[in-house]
Length: 177
Image (tube, rainbow, N blue to C red; front, side, top):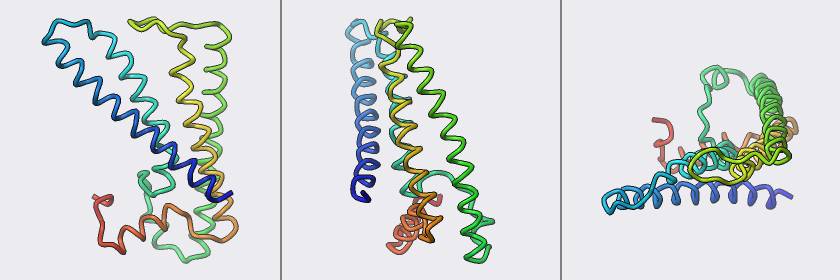
């Protein structure tokens, strides 16, 4: 199960990277296309959807690797048992918040699908298609936070702390800037 979950988070990170790559390609195409008088106004719509997809697909991977912005000034000063309690509380609050996000994103996308809502911009596609990245990304983030919460509850060190400690052991402090 551990390998499956780790691969799921890596796959989500891979999807985020692919979205960023496609954004790059489309932006280059739009820049060159404008100079050649090609119609490129549709690129803005697609790039906006890809930006959202990149953000939501990348959340679980970033969370697990300690790349989310976290305020640890208080947690670092606490004794180990108190820190564990505060980590569980923090992860539980995050789980509730992400559950809320996930529920409403699923409902919102379902309604777009059931009403056959179409994108009203240059690219006329069913809007639920780009909205699915929000659903999939929030579900994977929910799984990652639940996974982490259960792990900390069982007494293990959070993976995001282990990842940061591994980077620091290698002398990599680039994420701390």
